[in-house]
Image 1 (cartoon, each protein chain N blue to C red):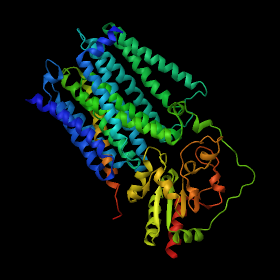
Image 2: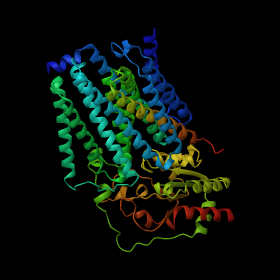
Image 3: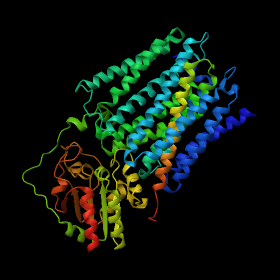
Image 4: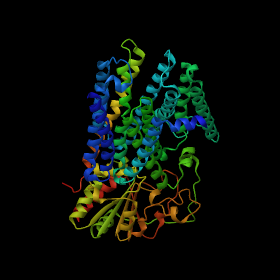
Length: 474
Length: 105
């Protein structure tokens, strides 16, 4: 009876994971979906594993040791709860990076214990299958763990892009490490019960080091791809650990996470028009070609604060194009204030969000939602471009490369081919910018010299705040 | 070759392969429908689901000999880390999704 209840709990839990994720397809059902998957599904899985009878575990006797489990859950639960309420929305990429790492680290722990049990038993259980799944969990989990820690440190800007990297040779070093790691995996599995614990330890050290070496050369600007990829790994490491324990819900949960991470990885790559391999080899943020340099004497045209305010106030539709610069300046709330004033005067306001705006997939949407911008106003790339075609004014705040026309018409530009927001389709373009320095990728932007473009120089938050008072005084 | 074929044809393994393949397809289908505005909550929500490794850690602790402190401590760490993921991922996703509103209040 207990066995049936436990089996049913696992089954329902797995179904709830799928159902919950499918409810994330709309903002209206998303919150409920998260509760289905993250609270009820996970709760059933945890209860099931706590109460599963010995027969389910395939063990002759269980000692339970519930106090250890309870302690772990209390400690982990409180840390998780505390962290989730303390984290700033701008720091979400860092938090996700750490969580990816923790998932990987757990898989490594489970794999190492499994190796230890296997080698220390008189009659090892599970045979090759046990070693194979442990090796898988160790490789994927190890890379997810240390890779995520490096990604975290890069996001926090503790380590710079060229830290620990030997230019030109790093790719070969990584290939060598990868070969060594896979070789060790094959060796450990092939040795079977003749193997010893020290082999597993050497294997673990190599896998952990590979994770570091793998992420270190990847440029800071490519972190959205890396985080999505490490998300994939953390899911797959959970799935591999599920194979160790013959647990179907672990495999289902892990694979769902793996699929989600993979989709996001590919979307991010497509949004930057680069192949995954190209991102992994790295170097874009570092030494990439600068593209066509400023040809001749180009003049930018400025607009005064007062004129900008009048223009905005008497237009029919305005599109804000926010980049990460907006979030750095903490100016989302001021942006929202302008939206409110304009909407009160009958101006239609939208936000055009490029997939790589922000530092992880979908980041900018969360930052604007936090500033109380209603989500129907947040347009993705395609919707934004069709809206821009009929818009009166596009206001660029802290975005640069994602509105660079060179991506469409300059084959020598490093971002050529990248899908971008065609802001110059709007009747007027106002660019808020601190100075004429090129953006993060060091690429000159012809948009600034476009006929329809007017520059409004200054700090983003400062400029927007002044715009608010200008608008109010009209 | 023979070994690989035997592995594939063993009913239990065959079922596992079914599960792996079908879950992957299902995952891709379901998640490709998530709109870009929800990609960050999707990532943190799936972070929570990868906390499912806690199941493995719980099973590990339950089977450990009460005097086997190596396994108990590793298992405890596994439960802790898995729970940070599961709880942290769930709560932060909930916090984020709360912010997505259709209209300004």
